Every structure is written in structure tokens, then in C-alpha cells.
Length: 99
Length: 266
Image (cartoon, rainbow over all chains, first blue to last red; front, side, top):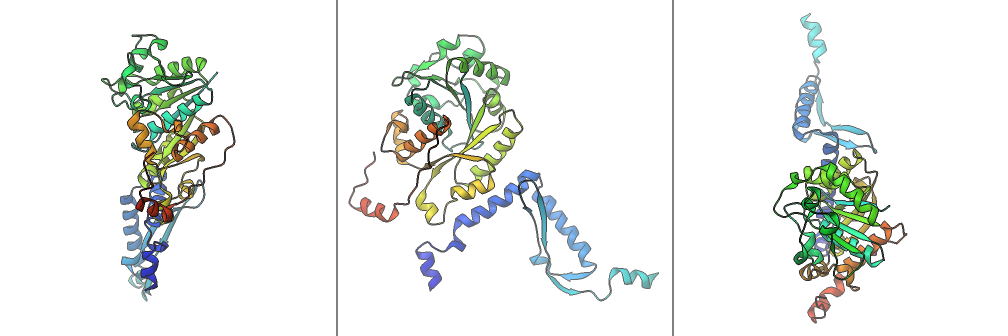
């Protein structure tokens, strides 16, 4: 009910289109400035999933990889990778067994 | 020697030409000698905003190609003595002029005028390169829309790699009611993303459309908020310190006024 009232009076900041615009703008500018295409980020994400999956089970659907501007001239690669569980037999130990 | 200022944006429809006409007129009202140059070859508009469309004899390409002298092509404004206008050619395209010619033209103009304002076409191609060629400083125009801000960022990047070192931002067409409701980016959101100084904030105002209909820049209208904002930009351009307009959302009273028919177009 409160949420409805807030929205009715236009005070609900979380759903305001301005915040959506601000976030979209921030992302698009980071990408524009360093000249990285969304496709490149997508293939980086796929590679990350492949490598990490050797060691742990991860929740691929809620994995997030993005670029953020830290200050004026530097960019950080931020990955949020939810881990479901660790794999008992890591790739390394499998290799020992085989060897 | 005068100062050549290019007004540019990347995106079209952000009121670049309106800004050029109004800032130029405001400077002339302050007693400066001003030349306005329309470089949007093929799509000229500045003549209409200034109300000088019936006086055009020669144009920019006539000057650069040597068909006439610069003095012959410059049109004197009908209201202000110090205001002159050089129209773009309408039947040619952007390649009819090259940056070197614009540099020479700007150099010649600034011997004579205090301010030379260059109205740049939308885009980042030849027209843009021509427009910035002879400029000493730039005013980047944007709107509180992500598409316009993104284009402005690109333009700022291109200007940084040019010889233009002073580059300031105009945020045009702000609607305070929408900002208040959280449905429009505010000036701070834009400044956080674009690393550039602010020179003016102009509210979206019906008076701009009305003044364009008449061919009479809004700076003549003392009750126009946008006109006031443009007059302030002109003063800041001359180095004066002018506080930014406080744009209030007069929404709560607006609808009552509308109800009683008190909101006439000025």
C-alpha cells in the first residue's frame, strides 16, 4: 500500500526512470570510452564460466561481469560469481590420479 | 582579436541552432560585435531562427570558393547593429568546404568581430571537422537524455584530441517538473558522467518555439526563462561570474493556473 502511494505521488525513487537512465548511461559511457563491445564482454564471460567450472559449481544465470570506471582514467573489471558448491575433485587432483 | 566559439553536440535536435542564435543575439545586445556562421551546408536553419531568411544573397560556399567577398556575404541583423550573419549554402553538401578554408575564414572574421559563433551540424563527419577547424573554444550542447549525453561524451573526446582546449557544457531543454518526479536526468547526473565545466542550464520553454515561429530569438523576451538562461550564458562567455538560474518545478500551481486559463502563451 505504501509502495502504491509512493508511486502514485511520484516519490518512489527506485522505480524512477531517471535512475534507470543514469545507470544505463554510466555503463554505455564506460564501454564507449575504452572501446569494448558487449560481444567481447560476453565471450569473456563464457571463458570465465568455463575456467571456473573446473573448480567449483557456479550459478551461471546470476553471474555478472561488468566494467566500472574507478576514477577519471582507470577502469575495473568487476565480476560477481555466485558459487553453488566447491568441486571435491579439482582438475589438479584428477590430473595426479591420471598421472 | 576576437574569439571563435563553435557550438556543437553530436546529436541533432538539442537546440544547437537556437543556442547559437540566442547567445549571439545576447552578446550583440551587450554591445559586442558578433558574427554568426551557419556551417550546416545543405540543411540551413540559423537564418530562420534569426528571421533573416529573406535577405540571403551569397553564402558560405560563395565566400570559400571566391565567388564573392566576405563583406558581401555577411548579412546585417535587422534589429541589432553589431550582429552579422553568414548563411550556409542550401543546395550544396558538407564536402563543398574543407577545414583549411574554414580556418582562413575564421581568422579573417576574428580580425573584425569580438565573437564569431559557429553553428555546427549534427554528426562527427566532415561538417563537424569544418566547424571546429578555426575555433578557439567550444560549447557542447546536450539534453537530459542518455542518447544526447552519450553523443556529447563522444564529441568531448574528439575535441580533446583537437587543438581546442576550452570546452564547456550547455544543458538544454531541462524540464524541472520531470526532474522533480524522478523522470529526467538532472544536471548533476550529466556532469558526473561528462568531465567538463558547465556554462549554462536552459529550461525547456514554450517561448523558444514561439520565438522561432516569429524569427525573433527568445533573448529579446524579458519574461522568457530560456531567454534569461541564454543571456546568462552570453555573460559567462565574456568572463562575467553569473550564478546559475534556480529552476523550480512550479507544478503544484501550474495546474491550478491552467485550470483558470491563466497560463497564456507569451
